[in-house]
Amino acid sequence: MEKSFRTFIGLPLRVESGFLHARMELMKALDGERISWTDPDQYHVTLRFIGDTDSLFIHEIGSALHKHITVPCQISLETVKLGSFGPRKGPRVIWVGFEETAFFDSLKSEVDYVLELCGFPANEHPFRAHLTLGRVRSLRRLQAYYNALEEMDQKFRTTVHFTKLVFFRSVLGPGGPQYSVLDELIFR
Image (cartoon, rainbow, N blue to C red):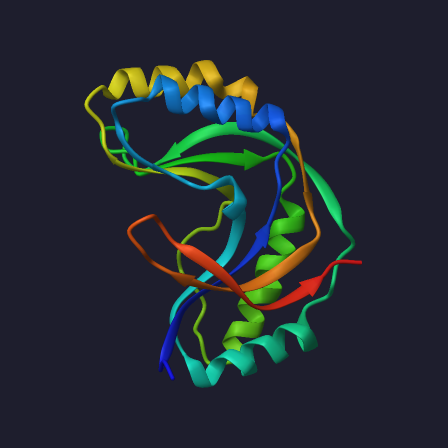
């Protein structure tokens, strides 16, 4: 039996066909750049990356989530911005943000509380709810990259629906990470 798993807590989501079409356009505009694109079947908003988690804590975390998270109603939210994380000369992540943030902030706060109860200290990194479209490995045409993001921004505006909170296991592989569900809370 494995001693530890790479884990995180997130909100899986599905996007509409127009969003997927915009994704293909953006991929085409950035063809030739070293970008690892996220598989749409794995789209999610990460509330908390935990990292290597001893297998003995998996059940404890799942139980604590069920006990201490206020299960919200299913919700639909609007995406509003196509952006990039990282320094201007070395962007690392292409993301889409959300107009409404209170929903994410509230759940993030509860998840952090649960993890502190389980012995995982609070994360000091600032939190911004986002959907990762791709991870930038390197760019040859920096200005063309920013031009493409600016030109495509409006095409990524859509509604996404959230129906559950998931405690995920992430296994890194040559084709990108593969996620499996360790536990989940279905929204009302």
